[in-house]
Amino acid sequence: MNAVNESSRLELEDLRREVGHAGGWAPGPTVVFVAGLHGNEPAGVIALRRVFRDLEKRQIAVRGEVVGLAGHLEALARNQRYLERDLNRVWSRRRVEEVESGQAPDGPETREQTDLLVRIRRAIEHARGEVNVIDLHTASADTPPFVILGDTLRNREFGRGFPMPVVLGLEEHILGTLMEWVTGLGHLGLAIEAGRHEDPRSVDRHEAAIWISLVLSNAVSSSDVPDFAGHLHRLERASSEIPSLVEVFHRHAIDSGETFVMRPGFKNFDRVRAGAPLATHDGREVTAERDARIFLPLYQKQGQEGYFLARPVDPVWLAVSAFVRRLGLPRIVHWLPGVARHPELRNALVVNTRIARFFAPKLFHLLGYRLESLEGRKLTVRERDRGPAV
Image 1 (spheres, rainbow, N blue to C red):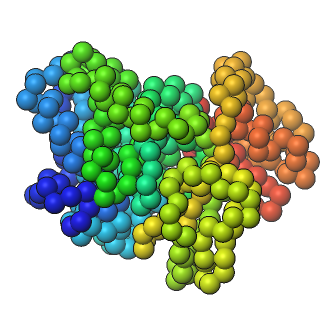
Image 2 (image 1 turned 90 degrees about the horizontal axis):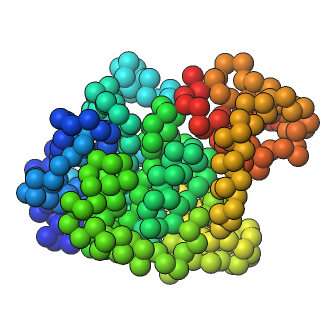
């Protein structure tokens, strides 16, 4: 295994699903960390082991319960992103129902997901306070650390407690992520990207992010965390040149069997100009459609997204959005012409884009709605802050 470094390889020997467990006595939140959903991303697993060792060695008081889970054990052992299916693209409501009812086709990802679901459900069922699920990742390109979240008010408030950029909108471009499934259950769910797969600093950044997550969750006190100020400084320094808030607006998809090669040298969040060559896809040159920041450029063999494009967001937008949501305006948006409640899904609307073309999608983002699907002129959107759309 060449990921991270040789000493880190030893950290993954004898790896089991539960990386660590702490607390369970005093009232408090339930915090679940999942690392290694992609098998070529072991940095989060290694960081979790460090944190649980410190929790035990220093006898740090834990309020509530903290659980650390390794995601794709078989892929981690092989240092592969996945074996048959991406384990972070299989968390749609329908797929989870199939897995839990035994109806999903057998395969390595189904077996991994089945065990993960049992453990995550158990943690949620035993929770005596808020549930926070945090998914730890690294990227194939050089990148500063950042937070990815679905834009609920709770996720937003928690995510902006980290001293690193927040990325919105990614869940509208990739389907079936663990983060989005957890958020759909009404819990806090976010992902943290710590750096490039092979960069030893990615482990240090994940360790810092885990400690900060525990403090933001009120599971541990910052005064009990070894070098808490140093952890804050490490993340802040690594991402100081990146906008504090960005929104993903474009995804370049790769279908099975297609050949995609990213141009060399791109770092995550690099500025690109409209028309700039970015990659070749089945022999065709691909260029940037507008001035933007390139996001998660693909420099590995496996993956369904060649790259994304993102743009900075004015923080004033967040304040306006929070204000209108708290006023309850999302509850009356179905009164607008061309907008109606969805006949089957709770907290969801159907928008006739022929009639309501001036409202979607910017207005719905402002009001806290996620774009679910577009079929012809029928756009389905779901309100994030009101829990599951079932």
